[in-house]
Length: 466
Image 1 (tube, rainbow, N blue to C red):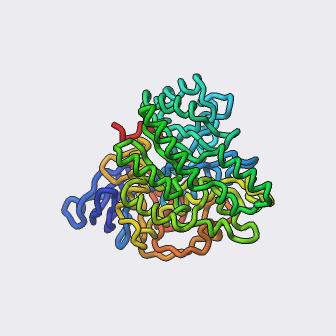
Image 2: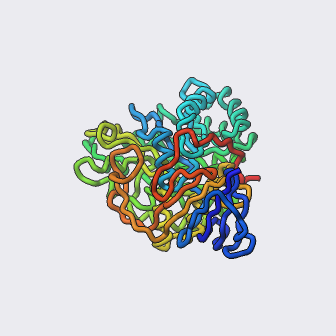
Image 3: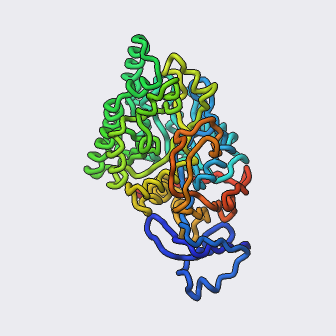
């Protein structure tokens, strides 16, 4: 049995802030005790970590990543090995990635393919959602079996006709199935049929630059799809989780549903909180770096997103980490914005950006931990194993320096991508040491982890529905 003690820090969870020492035994939290208490002072350990002047926080849970995702004729540039290593550097100790069903193939085949990509490669723990690309009687039946194996959430797309798109009838059938089996439907809510018309019209008119990607994917078409998804979920009697909410009008749809007491949840991402259409309009095709879907919005939308996080109309901040290099990948869309691979890097930056939000007064410290650790863990059936620091929890713990100054840059990040979406941004706060199941993966700003330490974590169903 190995024992580690973390002494002297301020332990912050979604529920509490307390000056406590933490005892870890065999990869799990064994006890917390007040600093200086006879109980804590009596602990003996193989290793003591001095957290004086630092926060002791749960490892982040990033519930929306896409490692090695095939998209637009290429693949996301982070592998499970490079992506989970970068996650660890940023204080995230669990990712939930997306296994993809191919049209005409089974869910099982898609899941097995993604398990093979991740197995033995990950530096931190991982789980999977399942993307339903082909809703059929067979795939609906398969949902039940996957829930029994710990894949308890299923993503559908109202966007990308011809790729991932599901029509309203398919969506309704999947929602009805999830209402019966306890699964959670995750929805990419944009009206892809209408967007494709606007894309075609923009290109025909010679509007080909990256900024037009944001202009054709209109906020009203995100709001319309969000509204429609909510109504379909009501008809099915099913819960709904809307991913990467970016627009004020979509937040209003979620807030109205939640005011009715409906089991409707929303996620946003750092790029919508910190970036805007100003980035998409950067000259010399630089705006391509910021092409993602839902797209970046005008800066005025940010206030509604921050407000939604404070009022709990938005519950989770995930990254939608899906990086493509500027050179050779984003450049596929020179002369045609619709061919720019959609996605941004961010898995390494989320915890720091949200701490900056604390510094800026947008969130409290506990809300930081709630939106980045505890709520995603509860939402996707990982709590209290993940997302908190409590006896019995996995010892996924970050020692965080709230006063360190750093500049975000591609020169210093560890994501396998040739640019940073936050290049030159100064933030206050930095990860110092990271434990994953009690094992040090970052030790005083040195990577000490290894591929294969991370384990697949089967998930229970959403804990907000029981």
